[in-house]
Image (cartoon, rainbow, N blue to C red; front, side, top):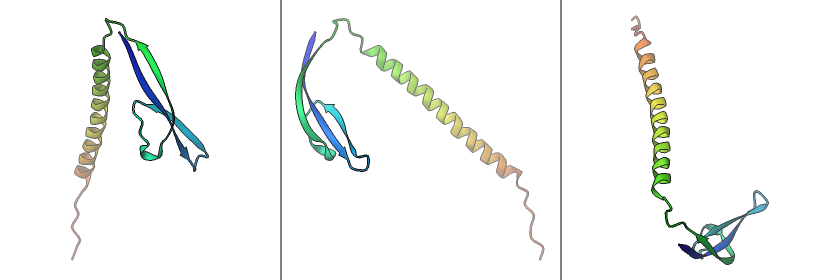
Length: 95
């Protein structure tokens, strides 16, 4: 299957970097300071048996691993705080 789309090349000047950044998007929009430089028609041949599900599953599996690692680190920090609080000894002030 052949897909043909018009893409728009846009530029966003960054004065603090003294350079500009170029991007392409699927719509002609000059939001967020981008200026449309031009457009181009592109065509891509997509195989009939293209599998778009497996890459999505792989991405979700990777995200799951990352979330588990972040959660584990957060739980470890909480556990450390709990242990630090338990280690405190309350000594009342003498009157």
